[in-house]
Structure formats: structure tokens, C-alpha cells
Image 1 (cartoon, rainbow, N blue to C red):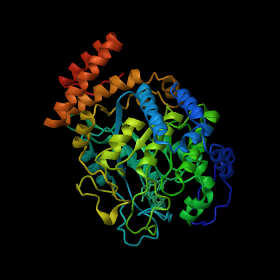
Image 2 (image 1 turned 180 degrees about the vertical axis):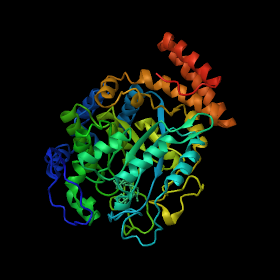
Image 3 (image 1 turned 180 degrees about the horizontal axis):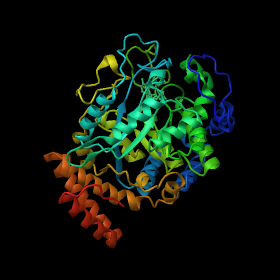
Image 4 (image 1 turned 120 degrees about the vertical axis):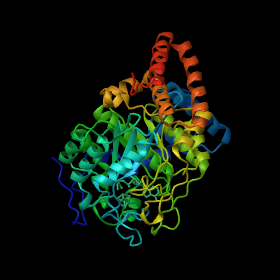
Length: 483
Ligand code: SAM
Ligand code: SF4
């Protein structure tokens, strides 16, 4: 059994080391990057050809792609990433909303507005009534999937989080408004606590390592439980031990050299896959944004848009089966580009303030974790997605039918998940348009669904007939139809 974290102990030592800490060491990441320097054209072409078989590439091969500076070669693997993404996930983009329950925090992450040392922020912990109001506001915009977040603090402990998740699931609004999947991004827990969290029926548990470089990590996380690198790195082992098998990893790009952290993420994915037969369900690729009250006035390792595009494509080629999440931290233009190169899930209509939805505040600075770039309402985001030929999806089928962990991977790895993703995206998007669509989203969305129906008829006429029937049922007022 893992030890409980002690909020009041500043030095956590190395008590929490597990195998993963030896699997991902700074020296190993550096030597992978060093040995991949100056890759030749033939080798890059071999790696791209291998990646197109959608079985992934090794961290060593990914490192070679990351070292490429030649624009023509970079374009080659950006195009390959596009093909791989379409083979596995088709054109669907899963939509979710983050919901911040609270912003109290005992940690002092130098980049975050919620950090303990930020005296300018107003602290807020939502009451159960306020959570109901927030969820009602989100359901009335059409959301079905939430990612709930908190800082790390004794007054927003696991009991509060579990109660709040149950409250959020219980909220029902008109037009069949309900939340069907809640993912959680909260501080690392012990195995025992993860068992309790699992009982609240969360979907994915997510935790970003922020950076895999121990020295940079120590400087950026000077105190609190999060200062323990090993406690954080070993978190996915404890979640697995507790039976949570859909896990999300991530790095906060801009904190350290992006190549180093991409290899860190890939070693982490490889470790989980080898140890549990299940790689990460998702990889998140947040980029550092300015946070008010943060002592980091400049991004320590600025990441250009070109580098960002490149890293998204490399991750997509390396772990084709893994969902990739982008948030509203990115501008509309950048998000649109990254959909093509590998991103498969996005947040929409987000606020990073506890209580930000009900009040319709534009991310009130005094409560916010960091500033956002894409502040468009969800319907506008969805219209844009449909116009660009992608299909927004509110699907929650896999998790509700028990297709999680290894069962999900067994479908995702050979590219079979699309047989569910595409029809379920069509069905849930249709439901959105019926219940919440505006003139513009209905026009573009209807066109998008009918284009997909034509494709489906060619690929699988029996399935197309089944989906056509279900679409009609939804138009007649039925809800929650999925495969
Ligand atoms: N407090 C928990 C933790 O740190 O793991 C969970 C939620 S925290 C609110 C979610 C994530 O926000 C962090 O893991 C970090 O990567 C990200 N974040 C913090 N400050 C940020 C900033 N200025 N720009 C972008 N992302 C940031
Ligand atoms: Fe707290 Fe998480 Fe922000 Fe760090 S990133 S200060 S742990 S909320």
C-alpha cells in the first residue's frame, strides 16, 4: 500500500520510488537524444514508412525525427501524422469542458496562478449548490464530458472531490441534458485513495509530469507535496494498482527543452504499455501561458509554433493509439492546424476560474489559473470544426460499455476504434444539433453528417443503414444512442 502524502512535510525524500523512476532517468533521455543527432535522409524515410504502418515508432526513432531541421523532411512527417491520425480516429474530435472545483493550493509551482505564494488571487472552493449551477450552465451549452480539476489542498481533499463528482453526475437539465463522463485531473493520490476515486466512476485520471527533467522540476516546484518528483512520476502505477486503467499523461511545454520532454513522455508511455499492457489513454500537450501572480515572467524554454507542430506530429507517429488533447490555451488558428497533425480531443468554451460558467465571466483574472486564447463559445467552435471537415464528438460510449484500458487498446491499436468513433461521433453531434444547435452550426453540421454518411455507405452499407435509422430516431427526440 502506498503511503499517504503529508501536506506539512516539506522534504519528501525518495520514499516513493518505483520502477518507473529507473525507467525514465535524465541520463537515459539525454543519451537517446544525443545518439539521434544529425539523422540522415534515408533513415528518416525509413522511420516515416514504419510509422505509416500505425504500429508506432520507438523513442529512439522519435528522437531522430525531433532532430530534423530540413523543412521538406518535416513536411513529410507532418503529412504522415495526418494519415496516421485519420486511419485511427478518422475526422472526429472529442469535445469536453474543464470544470475547476477550487483554486486553493499548498504547492508553489512557479508558473501557476493558483500557487500558494500568489497573494493576489481570490481563493474559491465551489459549494455543492455552486457545482450544480456550473454543471447546469455547461449542460445547457450541450456539454456531455467534463474534466474536473482542483489545486492540492487539505480543504479540497478527496472526500470533497468525490462528493463533487457525484453531484456533477446527478445534474439533469431539459433536452436530456446530462454529464455522461467525468475525467479527473487532481493531485497524485495513494493507491487506497485511488480506489475511492474509482468508486465515483471517473473516466480517465490525468496528471502531467510538467517536465521529466529532475533539476528543472526541482527549481519549478520548490515546496509542497508536488516538490516530490518521484511521488508524481509513480502516480500512474498507483492508479493502475487501484484499477483505474484509462490514464492521461502530459508535459507542460515551455518549462524545459521540448525534445527532452517528448522523449520523457514516450518513455513513460512505453513503460506503462510494457508493464500493464496498456499505454496512456491520452497525452496532453499544454503550452505554458502567462499566469497573473506568477514569478515566471518569461517562458523558460520558448516553443515556436513550428516546433509545436513538429512535436504533435512526432507524438502522433510514435503512439498512434493514444488520444491527444489540446486545450483552449491555444489560438483558434493553431488549434485548427494541430487537428490535422494529431490532436484528437479539445476543450471548448473553457473557463479556468471556479464558478466561471454560471456567471458567464470571461475568465476573471483574480480567480484564474492562467489566461486563455480561444474564448469562443462552444457553438462557434463546433461550427468552425464542422466547416473544416472535422466532426465534433460528444461520445462517451467506450467508457460506459466497459471498453477501457486494455479492451480499448485492443481496438485502438489495429485502428478498429474508428468503427465505433465515426458512427458515435455522428450520433452525438446530431443530438447536439437537435438540442442546442444554432442556425450556423445546424447548417454546417448537417452537411458534415451527410458527407460522413456518404463515406460510411461506401465503407460499410449495413452499418450506414443502422446509423441512418438512429439519426432519424434522434431527430424524433430520442437521446443517448450509441454503439
Ligand atoms: N493541481 C493539480 C496538478 O498540478 O497536477 C491538477 C490540476 S492543475 C490545475 C492542471 C495543470 O495546469 C497543471 O498540471 C499544469 O500543467 C497546468 N498549468 C499550470 N499553470 C499553467 C500555465 N501558466 N499555463 C499553462 N498550463 C498551466
Ligand atoms: Fe497547485 Fe496544480 Fe497550480 Fe501547481 S499546477 S500550483 S499543484 S494547482
